[in-house]
Length: 156
Image (cartoon, rainbow, N blue to C red; front, top):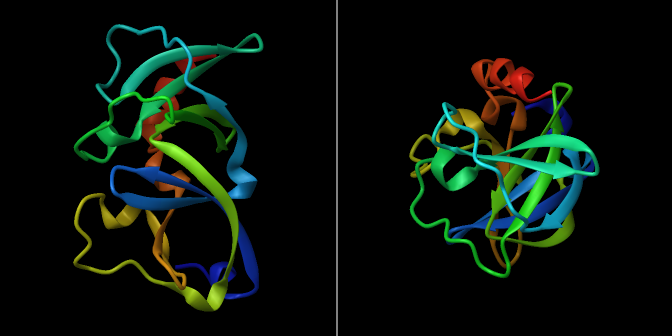
């Protein structure tokens, strides 16, 4: 976990993926949009649903259920596409629903546990212990690996 997380308050966009609650640093989130038609692109990884046209930009859309090998991932009326910027690339991520933006003090963030089930520990910044729940904080630079970035060059 970085020292930056331990000091001060940071804002996170909180979303659901299956039964768990996750958070992304708000500075990485460009916008949150309702589900729209996704155009499939042959020959891509199975966790890439395809691309969307967002105001003239072609944005690849990742399915986080598939990326993290999590069950579920059905499209519902609550499904959202969270558009983020990571290392100069804009990507969309399918999530089961976005609930809020929350300020999380650094002192309530714990390093990821070695016994985490589900997603790989390397994807995590930490786990925030809030009064009523735990929020798993994602590190987008790790979620989006180098081979993903090189593949994204094909979409620009």
